[in-house]
Length: 230
Image 1 (cartoon, rainbow, N blue to C red):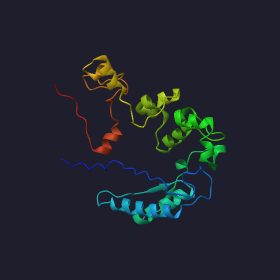
Image 2 (cartoon, helix red, strand yellow):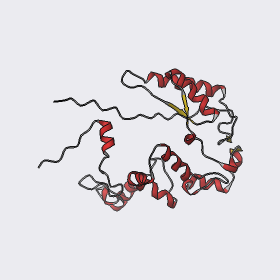
Image 3 (cartoon, rainbow, N blue to C red):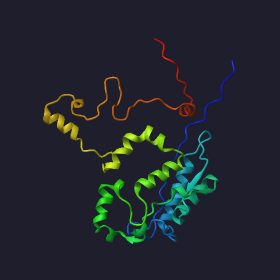
Image 4 (cartoon, rainbow, N blue to C red):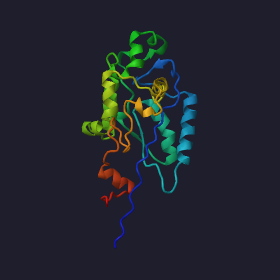
């Protein structure tokens, strides 16, 4: 019986923020050209480069380094690529958000604008004056990843659609209101007060999980699904 070739390991993506610049925490630079790393930012890039290089092994090697065309991202990516023996590949899709008229503005002035409150409380409903919206930036990144709108809705619709109505992201820092409500209501089982509880079968009515996994993804993981035998 012929042996099948081993499946390649799943893709691992490491996200690295650019190093500190002279205006970090002071100005909203956006896509303005000419902003380079500060000395501390250069040191940060070198440290990150050595850290990422140390993660490599014979079985797991980093194959590519991508960065936007901005100087600060190129200068952050350069030491990483050098430590890995690679070149930096430029990607227009990784560009910073287009802040439009706010580009180059001092943060201490932006904090005082009424629009800044919208940015913080309802970012998905805000468009930077003369620039792009967070929704458009999100679409740009999905396009870069090769995820079309149909796949977005199938896999992430339960999460993306609420933001169209202004639902604020909480970053996973929930208040545990359901637990508090369960205590006040005298319920022993928290499921009685959760809006979208897991069912006894392990399903999630909100996300429709678990859902079928694409054949391509199974191939990447080296998994074969067999029919159920009763």
